[in-house]
Structures are given as C-alpha cells and as structure tokens.
Length: 137
Image 1 (tube, rainbow, N blue to C red):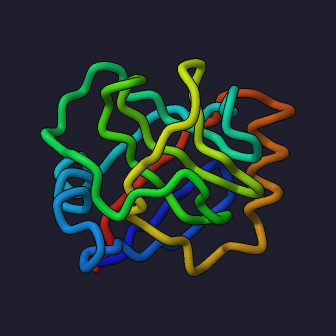
Image 2 (image 1 turned 30 degrees about the vertical axis):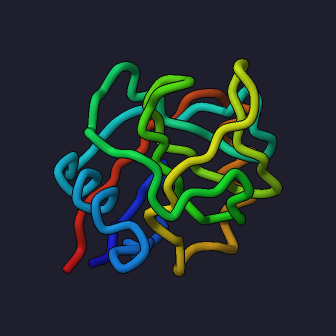
C-alpha cells in the first residue's frame, strides 16, 4: 500500500514497509486519513516531526534506526520521549532532549524526493505546516 502526503502544494508518495515493519504499518494505517501539523525538529538535524504526545500504539521497536535517509519516515512508539512521526528531508540523527532515539522505519518516499529540500526550507523558514496522509490503493 502507498500513502499520499501533501504539504501545501508539495506532494509525495510513500511506500509502506509492510515486510520490515508490519505492526508499525498497521498502527499507522489505523490513523489514516491523518491531518495534522508538521514542524521543524529541534534535535534531529534536517528533519521535521509530528508530535503525537502520549498516544499509545502498543508498539516496540521494529525496523528501527537512528540514522534515516531523507524520505525514510520513522514512527517513534514513545518511551524515552513522546510518540511522534519523524520526517527526514536531509541529514538526520534522530534525537530528543533526552539523547539519541531510534524510530521504526515504516514508510519510504519514492515520488517527490526532489522536493524534500523545498519541504525543509518551508518548515524551517515559515514554521508549522499542515500535512495530510491519505491511503492510496
């Protein structure tokens, strides 16, 4: 299954990593469609994030990494820091004020990658942006 991601006039398509992170993908799919705010990450470098607060998804680590590439979306299941989705648009080392974190790599952007830097500039320079995730067959 694919997911369409829109931020203003930016459009991305991402593939869910169902083989590597089946439980995380299932939890993410249960949240769709998702419309929320994307904000610049404070600790992780060239990444934006979606805070999900105390949302409990019943997940542990699955296909987890601290070093996602641009366009490799992570879902952090909570614990050391709050539950969140990390959206890397460049060089990223996933972290919080408590230190380095690892999140579940659950989706990879395969269309629109050439606009990731534009997304980063938008979030960094203009602040929080509305983001929408929609399931695609």
